[in-house]
Image (cartoon, rainbow over all chains, first blue to last red; front, side, top):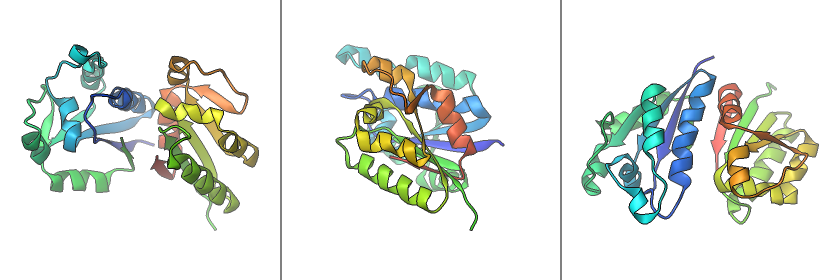
Length: 114
Length: 102
């Protein structure tokens, strides 16, 4: 049975490999007929931005974002957070408000928060 | 009473309070007759060094982890834990009636 899985990324990608791991997990979650939506929220929107983590020896997120496109993973970023963290988003990421995020979370079968 | 399958994702090491919470929730769920599966990834794989968590396997709780993350951290295999992949997490999330993340 197909399940809707929402994954929330809440932290900035610096000083941690958890964001890299969480994005890899999103790709893996599609392997069992799941529909995956990744939501960048708060400082997490920085992960969805045009950043250069290699400059501080942090892991590149490019491979995961490329896979998102191939696996039809929907990518959303919170409008208020984008403004707050002055983020220039990568291509293919939808901007939504918190009401829309709340609706998606309520309709999801599984919510995984990172 | 209808039994359910509870899936748990654990991403923090055993130094974190989450490990205690996962152990107690898992035990309580088993006592109620529910099926429980725990998947460990990221620093959560360090929980295989924590005997109270490994002991959950004796209660019929299935333990699995991301082998890629465990290998990155130089951990050796232990018998009670399935050395799995992200596919196993996808299956657990898909098959569970309730899914919790720690």
